[in-house]
Image (cartoon, rainbow, N blue to C red; front, side, top):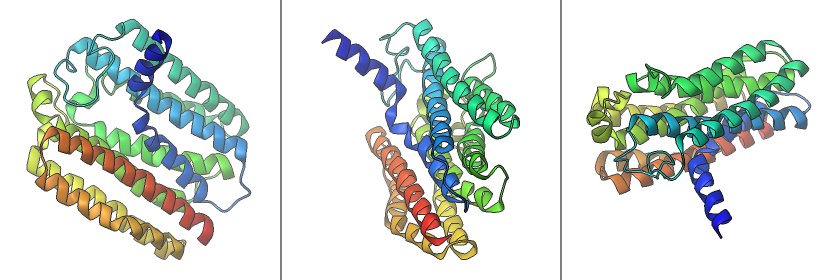
Length: 292
């Protein structure tokens, strides 16, 4: 029973609900190119992206925990902040996750291009210094930019690159809605934590913008993602129009973020934004596969 409880604690710390943000760019990137599908390269890219996401979660848990910024956290419990696990063990979990990503990435680099080693190193450094180090950039309002770049552009284009070993414009365009929705997850998460982050000196973009402008930014990202999918349909594959199936959920989320501002409501909006990200990513991938 104790073993099950310990495993449950670590699973909770890994925050499995965030894993779709790592899966979607690999699916979309792989689907954005016309080529014979290479299963091994796809699986390796999936390992890299997923391990990085889990590593980010553990790294943030550790860094925020030792700073004390998670002490009055409203959302899901953190391992260090709730004093369930020793900080050193959470740090080790982050390192192991990054190591797994590095090994899978190294294999991909050897198979395709050694330039991937440099990109992978940048991704790991970005993951650690989001909340780690003496001046974490996530505390200065640059988190959304990093998410867009690494869980949008880099992950999507990189997944396409390992299939065809070149960069095509289609994968770059397809990375935009993926990155916007991944960033929207962070926006609504930080929107929920504006008050507690302000008190602990965590100057996220939401803290810097204030509530009304953060709501506008969230709406822009949702509309921007849907609009870019329409552009993809016109440029590359008309069947991508199936992504319009998520429009009702998109409109509901925008309405909710303006009208429901209590912590439990915002946690629900965060969960539904994750569902939107996953659903739209799946539909975009299906539309690309069927239409290209």
